[in-house]
Length: 465
Image 1 (tube, rainbow, N blue to C red):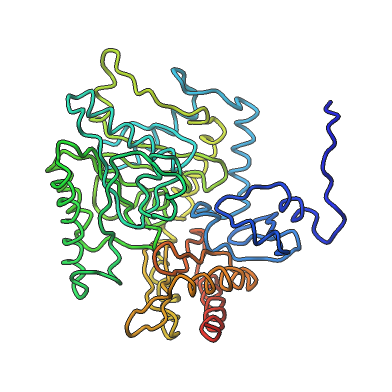
Image 2 (cartoon, one colour):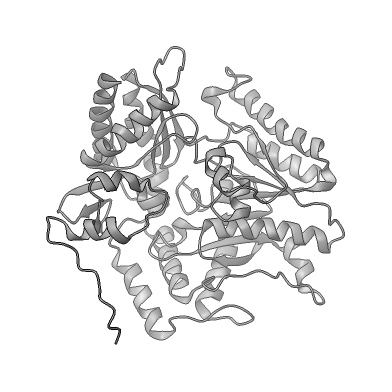
């Protein structure tokens, strides 16, 4: 037994928060705020659409953890599935071997995915799935006689993950500067923010065609012989939930086919019911070459992601000595796979996705009541996935400058929303927005609670800016 002295939190009102302040390196966190006395929130329990902190306070989980907890917190079915699998086979890798749960989950995902997307490569999360897709695109073209096709195109302000390849795809300059140089070959095109459309701001269909044409233009500029893939979220998260204009995704599909470029749907957030279908690209009537997914696959109860690829992309790897030299220790983890299978049962049989389809318009209508507030410029999204853009002047769509955004979001709103009982995201990757992606099990009572809290906090925010 180790004789190394262990840290014991000093006596005080909240030893867990103090221990977190001293030892826990939290992700995407400005830790200086906790060095000056701000309390570290410590969440200890969840049930349904709510979570509780270590002081007994309850919060409506308006972000499903991190766009993940589709079926809500505290589902015994998922806990039991994990426990059963851990007792039977806690871990074994899928490096040249297989185990039943990985096989069963791969088959199930293949049946759920559109078209001939029948090959499932498991990862630990969404960033790894995106990294996997780019590497597959490169190697696929290399072994099929087109080694010059390595570049990728993604969209402005889009977030695709933190590994170096996925970060190169990410269209948020501030998220990348500290880690440059990144992977070469990643190029950006405009996103589908219709609220701030630089062209065709009065015609959503024409704007969608314009935005799709920018992808074709980028392929032509870089040279079709050098472009391997286009990465695109069906509904873009970062920037505040940009849905695809009518016809946009179909146009992107046509462009990718024309230039022999792979279309990759990054569904890390949008899959597994978030947009009212198992995969959002299915709801929008488009079949990509690859889907990347994670988060909602297990409802966040265990870490798991996947790249789902078409048979065409797997075929060269089924011959000779060709091997996709890529993998992760935890990819296809037995316990995570068992949880995913149980979660898919709940999504399939528990009426969860049907609940989204039945209530999405009511959710939108509840949020749109906030449009009477002068600080609310736009409300956009789909399914149970919405962004509320905040403005200084709604008539001109004037946004906040960097200092004002800092004071509004981090200086006031993030803490004020949480203190009011709503966990969500106040974000300025792009223009200032509030993002909402609650568990898929909620209905009108929770919609009303979200609207009431937002109204109270936004009204106060307007009075102090």
